[in-house]
Image 1 (cartoon, rainbow, N blue to C red):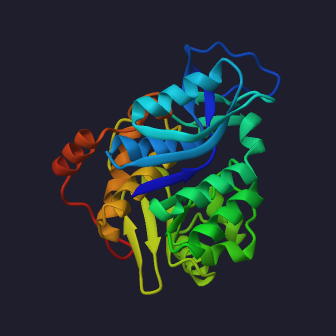
Image 2: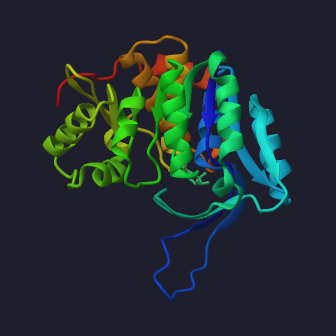
Image 3: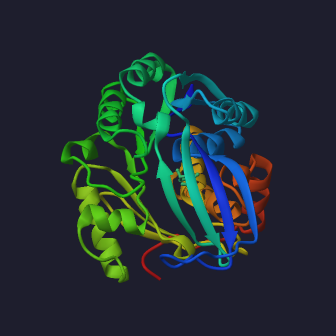
Length: 313
Ligand code: RIB
């Protein structure tokens, strides 16, 4: 039984700079590096590093990045039988600026991810009988994500949908998702109002649960996350860590959430795992390179045993 991830695979081209450049400005940066990324692949690596069997379904291009991206997944322990090399396009790429405070700005060029379609859905169908959790995001065509969620739900496999990057969702998708995990910006675009106030965040959680998704978590970066189901809304504060690069913190969160649910852990425990993985990931540079290993995550949780889980503090 596996965590089955259908999603994007990118090569990240990262500039570290003192701040974001203004329009028309040329700014001198400190450092450049490439690192494997893509929301789908990052989440697959996050789950696999926690030693949960993980399978990736997606596409890379026939270029210099394609084999490197596949290799990175293999080294993390992800099964890549479902990752196709598309000879007609380049691999997905992301141009990223990370500023000194660790915040980031990203331009994504979909490349092969934009051609994920029927072939990937057929592979999903093939592997659904041996999947315990399906993990989806929105960096591949939306109609494929919607169909993947519907097929997984029909097969009785719980779906975690990380609705990133922000976009409008068709109403029917909510009923097919067991978990919805937007960040603040994505949640704002789903409910149509600002989430600056704590009451608004709780209201957004209730609205999204009301649309038919039984578990909703809104991730809030350094403010932690807010979880809701049909009975209650719970706040979970973030761990305090030194932040160098926030790229893929949400992916660490989602991959760890999937891994914890795969292991049958409680909601409270799964959220602690997810929060801890997100916290560890921001302490180092790069998307996939920053995903914590199981031993590290367990040691971190052992060192930080008592975290709040309850009504708005
Ligand atoms: O979530 C972070 C990811 O978003 C990066 O790795 C980049 O590839 C973009 O897809």
